[in-house]
Image (tube, rainbow, N blue to C red; front, side):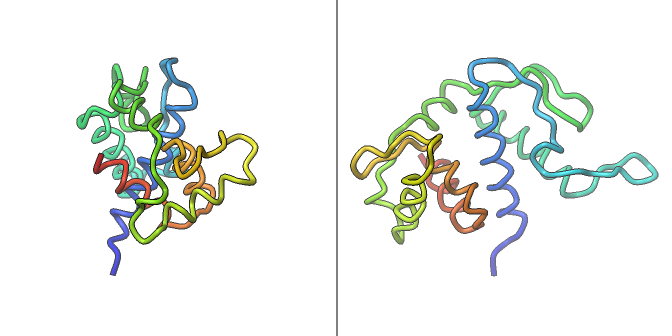
Length: 154
């Protein structure tokens, strides 16, 4: 049985990295609701566990050196965020689809063929960001989980 909170973590991290990559090298404000969806704090002003988990994912990405930010805006957003060198090179790297476990990356890579926005794969290699975008487009948790596991293990 899959742990839903880990699947949510992978999806939140993937969406965040994609959004930050799209604005790189500009500093941007990243709102938690743009990643996890709308949230209504309770009568005490506390956010839902889902919103808090997404906010914690952003902080984890920073603590692990994938992104940097200047400040938090309560638990609503992180301000002046950008990719670090580590995050940029990770997302820009060419990944081999041939060496993917269970050939799941090959399936994700094939999704790129019809996408106009994505750069074309080179042979058996594709930029990591394109594979990440294709996984997000499929809306399949297993695809997002696979690409994020590969990226975070590099």
